[in-house]
Image (cartoon, rainbow, N blue to C red; front, top):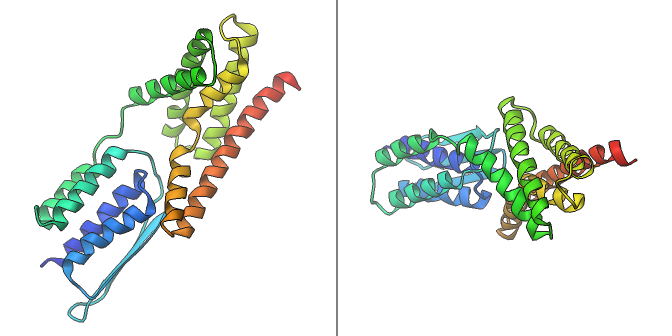
Length: 251
């Protein structure tokens, strides 16, 4: 049994899941399931939103402990699902650890969603939420335009590796300025409040809030609080950007 490869496979699976939006308890569960196939006496893992730790120990081997820092994170539920499937197939004996590790390497290098899809999603989400909040057809069209511009700008800022919080402040500020432009200076939008609320929805940290709740309910209080703090700071960043843009014209 190549227990070192099993250990590498478990860490790689956890890293991919953590980088792509999986809950902390799910990452720990996946790592532990893979490590337990060694049948060793000690199998431990500890995962936070920014890193993971794992230990494998047994009287027959020298103890192995590894820490892996996970910096940049994004959202790609497709990768999480694929890693989950690979881990379950390996644990149930359907595939070998060599095949599991190879498939994980392929999953790790999968391209993220294309820039075009991201931009289109920004526009569609902004426009649809504007209607949900009571916007008119003109507001729908205005939010669609602003959402598409927001998507282009937000992705451009990400490509420059600018801090997410700074990105959110500037992006939401741009939403406020464009909303004022399209409602006060161009005869297109009618309700600036609805347009702004709809257009900032793509920036709202829904996944961070959901993961914070799920981690907390699973008893992982440290990760739950960390994700809740992340969501709170993002929300504050969005509010600051909107407040600055509105204050430039209305105060």
